[in-house]
Image (cartoon, rainbow, N blue to C red; front, top):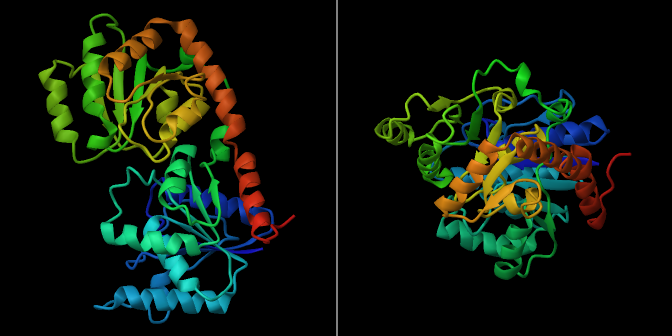
Length: 374
């Protein structure tokens, strides 16, 4: 099977990492994969991509130059590439790329699978114009995939004309799954228990709420520290909040890390405080590593990942008292931490393994009449 895989760039990000994981897995079993970033500035690939994956930059294609009609030129270049390559199926990530994939393939009879990477109801990167074009394009795709059942419900209500709708969660990376369980905190170098959080320092992550909750618990649990991994525009405001609460020695804005699993594995618990998520990879990976987790039941992902709170402590969105109480339970009870950590890890490692996610993709390919490599 020849797969043309379209996405905006390979600069970095959750969608790009998943694309690399899928492309590598498909080629390893014998599929022919062309990975095409469509970003006009070309850029670089920061993820490890197999040498068997053919990386082709749309910016390098004839006619995909700059100028006032750049978008149209790129679309025409993509259409010419599709006609020349004749893939068996096209897979695209992210709304703007999805729209281009549908438009460039019109009349080709090549199945096109477009993949939304955020919860459409909460997406802030889709302009009204792009939303209208999406409404026209998605019913013309062979299939639309989303990452969660909550996103699928939104699609059914708002884009009922879509031909096929499938839920395709992100797979856990194989390298993470090779890490043994349980984690052994006694072998770590950390002198005190650490509550971990991870994400871009933006309003949606609600680290301000988390810092306030932790400050309320600090006197009751004097040994604990809070470490937040990530960078973003709210760093100065969050640091000011930490200092004003007198939490400078207890709460750390740790910045970016190139080794997120190693960073998370140094913790004793994990918390997700977001008001909205598309598919919270940090929560999934923390659970897979065996960390006991507390998470806000935001749209979308946490409820499904935790099996409605069976495998982590799930609290209502916007409820600071509930978040504080859940954190207190985890910080106070080592037995609960061990139980939640192991139970959550076993569940997500089974449900979100690469093998399980590839099986979902193969089922969708089969529905479209495309046969994967044996």
